[in-house]
Image (cartoon, rainbow, N blue to C red; front, side, top):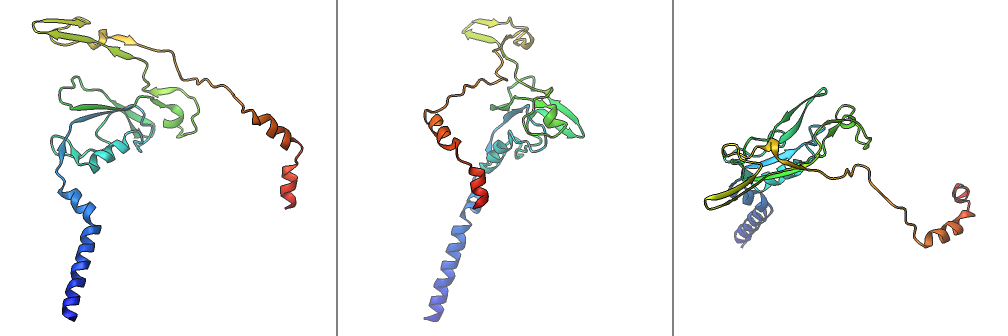
Length: 205
């Protein structure tokens, strides 16, 4: 009986260990999925890569990899502003063609500003722009129907010339508008507490 009880205890322990470790070994058994994703991030004032780090974590957790089998890396796998330290930086340009990508993810186009990049301040103070910012959207059109086709601007060879795209812009929204709307109870509360010396009362307690 003791040997049989010990065997059942051993089985229970193994089952518990397998159950607790299931998320780990199930993740290892999950097959990888090939995905060539272009990540665009022009708001990278430091090496935290905060605007696209979450996306990269999700890609790795779901086992999405490049076509060559490499896992995604927040510091390497994006185009846009790249901080180098000491006030230095580089800008990785967009590829000339999107043919090699399955999808494009625009993480942030707000840009990098001196207060964040140079002075390491994150209090939102306005300052000069170092790089980035979405000033407009460039639009081009290509329509094909059998042997007929139409494009704007006109094709140069088989390519739409991006430099001639129509640029759509909008009024700036950098200065927010707000309106103060007090609730009806505000004046009643103000009158009720106007004669109360709260600071003095708290000091006597």
